[in-house]
Image (cartoon, rainbow, N blue to C red; front, side, top):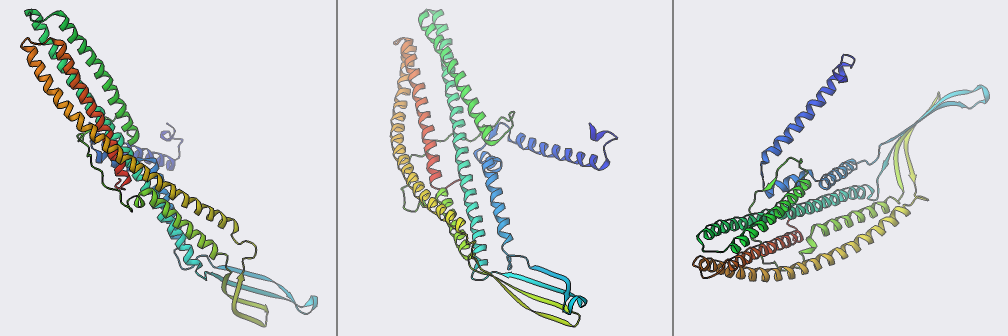
Amino acid sequence: MYFLTPHCPPRRRRALVARCLLILLISGSSARAFAALGDGLSLKQALALALERSPIVVESALEWRRFQGAAAGVAGILAENPIVSAEVGPRRDQGWGGNQSSVTGRLEQPLDLFGQAGTRRRAAQDLVTAAKARLALARAEVAARVRLVYAAAQIATVRGALVEERLANARRSVEALQLRVKLGASSDIDLRLATAETARAEAALAQAQVEVSRALVDLRMLLDLPPNAVARPSDPLLAPPTDVPPLTADLLSHHVAVKAIEKRRLAIDSEIARLERERLPRLSLGIAAERPSDRERFVGLALSLSPALWRRNQGPLAEARVERERADYERTTTLAALERQWTGLREERGLLAQELRAIEIALQNEEDARNLVQAGWQAGKFDFLRVLIAERSVADAKQSRLALWAELANNAIEIRRLQGEEP
């Protein structure tokens, strides 16, 4: 490479080598961090990775820091730097022959009166508060997305485990029927039915593995993990709760989206106040020194006034007032949408809970029926077709319960997000 050849300057060579070492150290630390995850990734680790690497969160944090820097710039007592002016030239007092040198100097400091400095600082600080609220909103949305994707990966993993259990039962049935066919206790038709059920279970397992792979790919993409990182959910899938807290009057008003809009409204109000105060006259207090001739000296105070005659912030004030109306409308529509979403989630949670209770009862009865049918088949009272139907019924009931768990988990995550419990 060029920086390793003798033609490269030593300073450039050292800089390039240091940069390469830094890249290697960063990549090595990232690789060690991903290797520490192993095959298991908890929800807490997934949330930490997403909140650290999500582009939305990173950009919101940088915007917050930018407004903090702007607020620090106007936090001083004097908003503007002093103005220094000087004049040097000849003065003619006695015709063409009486030229004398003349020097004039002036030091002025613009003053913020009538609350101009306070409104400027307040406007800058309210922008920081609004940016922080947007950062909290971004973190909440990213955390909710991580919970949804993590729950989908858990559901896909459990669904694959259920299909593996179905395949194991089908293979045991094939082994038992092969022995019974040899002994003459069953016909070849039962063996073919069991073999067909095994093939169906193998196909279902392949499909379940595809779903697991897709869910893990979505999780890696959301967490910005490398392609070779095997991040499987390590937290066990728990039955989601079926109760919903009541909707209070101030619950939705404390939602992060509503808070972000309210902070933006405050920032707009502060900006309007700043623009209105800046229409007032600006005063500057200074010291003037003058030497009009060799025998004259003058030192005194200077006061200047800059009235806002033409530039009165008409355009920015009109834009700010329209933006204030837009924020009011956005707050109203956001509250209405959140209330509708909350009502829909409560109704959906109640219906899903009823369906889950019915599925639990049906699954218990189907498992009891399967056990009885298997006992009767082994005793020679039933044919294998009834055993196959009973096994399929149990497998379908378990898959239906798992699908309800997935819907209830998503419902719980949305309710958690509406309650402002993210991340």
